[in-house]
Image (cartoon, rainbow, N blue to C red):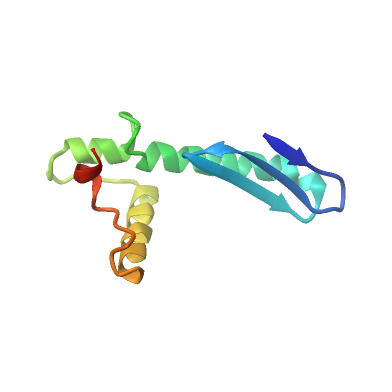
Length: 103
């Protein structure tokens, strides 16, 4: 973790997350601890909902359903919608449907 903070100044913190680096930057250093907690919670939620590397993720539960109807959370629904939009906007360069090929 790398953190820089002081009151009323730009403040930044970063840490490894989801196979990359999470970065939070705020205009007021006193807001950094709360902002970091919020981002950490959001990343933990998306990891639990949409990770293909976690057996306990919602995505893996859906994959194990093998095509059977499975109710999903609003968060996973949003993640899938964003991923499909990225696929459309990139002409398929970004493709969230390659799970079987990646496994």
